[in-house]
Length: 64
Image (cartoon, rainbow, N blue to C red; front, side):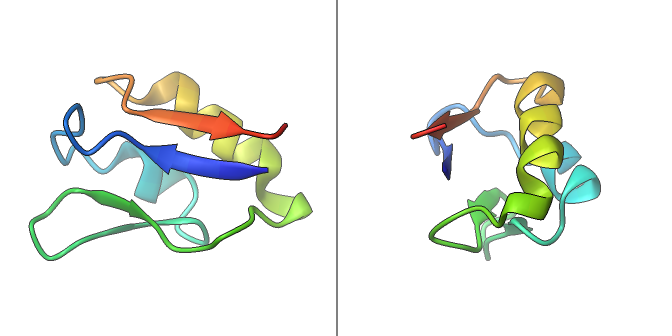
C-alpha cells in the first residue's frame, strides 16, 4: 500500500505526523510528505487513521 498526500489540499496541520511519524513528515515548506515508498504492514492501521483524521482530506492510499 502507498500513502499519498495531495499537496494542493494540505495545509500543514501535522495530524498525520502526530499519528504516524514513521510514514509522514513535514517538508521544508511545512506541509506533509510521505517518507516511505510502501507503507510497512505494521503501520497500515495508523495510516488509515491519518487518512480519516486529516482536516483537509489531503491524504489517500493506493493499492490497499
